[in-house]
Image 1 (tube, rainbow, N blue to C red):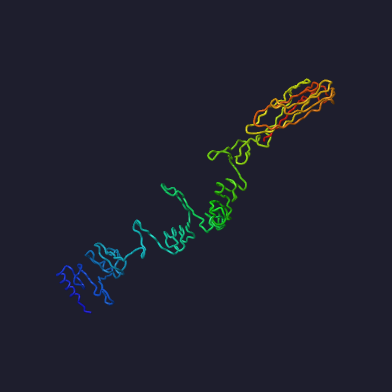
Image 2 (cartoon, rainbow, N blue to C red):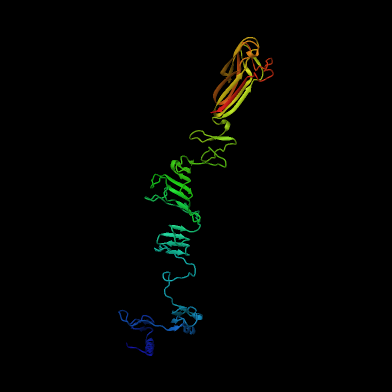
Length: 473
């Protein structure tokens, strides 16, 4: 290779510069002030083509003064000098240029693909209509703050608080979901889809809608579940019958079971509720119990002392006083004679004091059971006979015969007559009374004996008496 000494090159350059404003190396027509073209632009020659600039160490660059702006050097060592003054940026070997105040490093291209870095301020990526995608097939392929947010590209999982998520979304720690966003088009706070065709998910097999577990070392495992899906226990039936149930404890017990069957039913401890609310077990009510009412109006809690009674199928039960409940005694009533009255032969008279008025409540029927006891002695020496009558609103509804052999001796007194009568009545007000009809001889009712041994002075012994027991139907 033919070599030209440096003075000759410089002299040639100086001569060339006098002739032209542009200098070319290895070319005739330079395209700029100083244009260098490789001697061998192509081929396999081993000759070196290129441009060498001054190579100095850091101490030499730091010692320069009066440096023109844009001067460039190559620092081949930082073992000398210090990273101060105009060399404050010189921390490694490489190319540097002078910006008028300091030597500035000419760095190789740096980006997130080959170099770590630190943001010096807030940055925004505006995507416009373009997508930004990260492709990964490894565990923790993308993360923020270590385990704060982690994407498992190998298993298509996301972890929050975990860099090894075990399910599609794995959250370590508490959560907060706020769906109360003004103007939000979607109103559901959370949508969960289950039951893909061919997979019996959410139909009371081994899969559950939401499974809550405990990590306690004393007793790990499930503690509660929220289950939902098809009411059948095979594949999804497509019949539209769905359920929602709640389980507490390790086994799948479904203590509360809701379904849309029969217009909507709720079962407590049963999977087949027969009514709107079906409780398979005991029930404790610690406050009032309302019955009746409508879908928009409260029912009645009753009053103190009332009992709940059935009004038949398809009718709401109602609160009633015990005295009005079917099969119970509504009241027990008793009257007795007051004054003596002699009823002459062939006449009929009301027995004094043996009259009573009873009321059957509205909406009810009641059965009245009468028990009547009466005496009708003859105070003369003739035989006598007659009858006691029971009247309802002036109409005879029952009677009983009585008689007495003539004479005034004690043994000749009549045996008291007792008779029964039952009457079933609808709502209304009714008056009942006892009469006596003297068929033969004169007889006295409500007689108070005074000449008979053993009876003397007993003012109630021979009075006419009537008892009425009222039963609710």
